[in-house]
Length: 261
Image 1 (cartoon, rainbow, N blue to C red):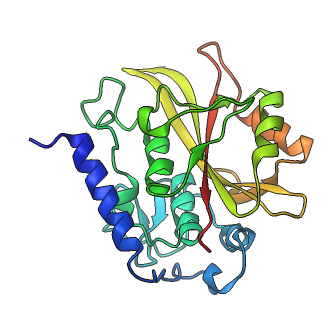
Image 2: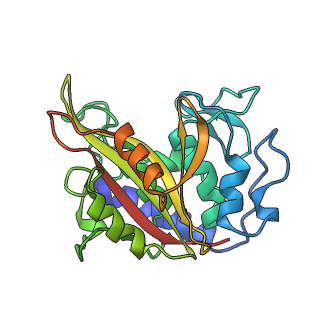
């Protein structure tokens, strides 16, 4: 009997093969006007989505409809995105792949289903950014010369670096270069039912080659918004919005992949 891990890897490989066989057509998200494929660079993609209101569980499907992850049959009348929905929608343009929402949610290691000992969907953000970069020449961006093999890791063992570590941030930001996009998943230790850890927030980071490194994400108060991480004030705001607790430090995993714009 084929193991779940092998099955998931086979499905992801097929999606990569078929994505590379023909030019991918990405439909305009309904109600947003000109699509970023008509523009020139990754920051244009961020600008295109910036300002969309936050909505719990909201995403854009492969037809360009605003919908819900949990209820894909629902079509929303107005644009709205949560952090995962924004990350998927932007990644379609970054990587030239018209992802199905079901593919972006694949439980890669079969360790976060309804019967998971760690709680259902505890590593949702981890799975999401790796599903989006599957088959690409990617790497985990770690500070101070650290390395990790993504294929030998999981959401517990590979969490990146501590969000509050300013020196680590400085080293990682120096590694970011134009022509690459950086997807991130933030995680934190929690105590709720059988949960021990939660990958709770995702987004993207884009260096523009003009002296800025833009972090863009969807947040409850500001919707889809971007900030320049090279501004000390902006970096401090991100750190303060994600504080450590008595349970342990919050961490951020950043995965680099090549742009296909």
